[in-house]
Every structure is written in structure tokens, then in C-alpha cells.
Length: 236
Ligand SMILES: Nc1ncnc2c1ncn2[C@@H]1O[C@H](COP(=O)(O)OP(=O)(O)OP(=O)(O)O)[C@@H](O)[C@H]1O
Ligand SMILES: [Mg+2]
Image (cartoon, rainbow, N blue to C red; front, top):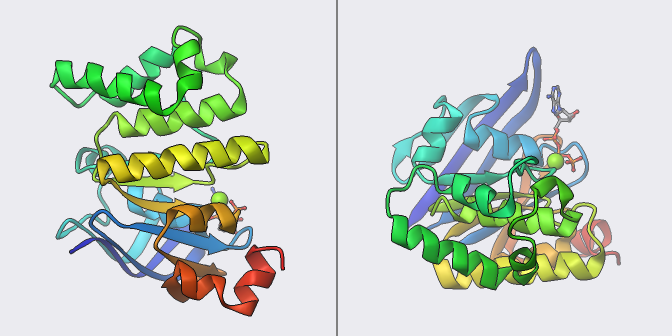
């Protein structure tokens, strides 16, 4: 069943329209990539879903029209956004950041178990549990941002460039953990990623954006087989 559906979504910053017609679907439990050059509108697409930019068109989540809802209302429906540039609370500790992620939940005991799960998923964080987020490395901050989003127990995770600024081996570690999270939790994911090799390690299908428009959608295997995708995103 379809969890998220965008149909000809437009978005504007003030008078400037930057999305001209983005259409994509994420099935329940599915993982979908969003590829595209710098400025193509990938981040804006995620913002359109989470309610932080003015939008047109249709955005349906779990059978209801969510376009125009406030960010807190979207989050309460089960959509967690890991923004570009991470979005951890710098002055709070690792444990506090994880606890804040669960602020809408009441199941105290399960929250403790889920914090423990995050620390198994990201062992680096266990060693830094009392450290302020600001004192973490870039990779550790990215792990914390993903962990914090998971703590909300969302139905859908929006991930924006989780590999940005990380060493290749760290980026790989982060994506392997996200993949395990996907398998363990069944959380659906919409994944913006410049590094298409990493994206294809996680997603089943992907959508390619060009200047604010969907131009192509296919399975990972189909896209990897296309010359123009290889040239543009896979380094050959
Ligand atoms: N806050 C803003 N105000 C005005 N224009 C913006 C704003 N944020 C983004 N834009 C413009 O919207 C367009 C799409 O930007 P967006 O950030 O969605 O692209 P992106 O695909 O995520 O790019 P990148 O790969 O560089 O992260 C760009 O032309 C950008 O300059
Ligand atoms: Mg972006």
C-alpha cells in the first residue's frame, strides 16, 4: 500500500517557485531515493512534505491530505525529518538528544529499549552518551540525528544527504546502519543523496529531479543500468 504520495507538487520561497511538479510515491515500508544535481529541488521536496515551505499540488500521507499542515502536525502523524546539516541540539547530550526525539511518546520502558537499540546501531554514540552534541565528530552527529529521528518511532523517515561532509568510510558505516534500521524497523524512507552508490545501497526505487521537476523514476537496478545515470551520479 502507498504510504506517501506526491502528485505534481510545487513549492515556492516567497515569489520564487522552485518546485514545478514533483511526483513520487513511497510504499509502506519502502525506501525511495531522490537524486538530482545541486539546486534541483531535493531538499525543498523534503521541506514540502514536512510543511516548512509553501506548496501546491497533492501531498497524501497514510490516506490523508497533509499539504498545508504545520511541521509539528506533520511530525505528529509519523514523519521524522533528518535535515541537511544534521539538526542535533548542540548543547544537549547524546542521551538528551535521543530522549528529545521521543518527546511525543508515553511508553517510558520502550523508550529506554529504543535508546539502547540506537546505541547498538551506532556504537560510537555509546562512548559519547554524556557528551554534548556540539562536541561530536561530523559522523557521530549524523548518527545522532538519525537516532533522534528514529526515537520518534515514525512511519516515514526523510533523510537529507546523510553522507554530506563525511569521510567515505564513515558515510558507508552510517548507511549500513540506516539499512539495518530499515530492516529491523520497517520504517519507510525517502532518501535524498548525492552519492548515488550509497543511495542505491539502501533504496528500492529512485526518482530523478531536474530543475524542480520529476524527470525519471525507476528501480535501483534500472537506474544503475542507464548510461546517463551512470555518467551523472555514479562516476562513469
Ligand atoms: N530559503 C530559500 N530561499 C530562496 N530560495 C531557495 C531557498 N532554499 C533553496 N532555494 C532555491 O531553491 C532551489 C532548490 O534548492 P534545494 O535546496 O531544494 O536544492 P537541492 O537539490 O537540495 O540542492 P543541493 O544538492 O545543493 O542540496 C535552488 O535554486 C535554491 O537556490
Ligand atoms: Mg539539498
